[in-house]
Length: 102
Image 1 (cartoon, rainbow, N blue to C red):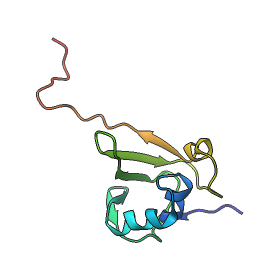
Image 2 (image 1 turned 60 degrees about the vertical axis):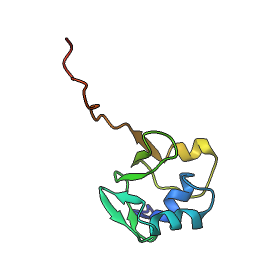
Image 3 (image 1 turned 135 degrees about the vertical axis):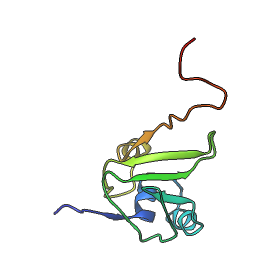
């Protein structure tokens, strides 16, 4: 039997975004997580494969964008967690920089 979705707080915990599931739920409750550009405050929100999650990051630029590749079955090692998502790099242009080569 394949699972079509997973609770957001559980998926974030499996993906090792925070050390405890309650920390994941707190991030969500504060409105810090977005699913497909829609802010959510519900830890029980459904995450599907292909969804894009936006969450805060302590490192610059201060935002992480993750595409859900798989739904976890348990909290495993960091290597296992990395298989659950693809990190998407923002390609926004810097102010004052031109995309054309001179």
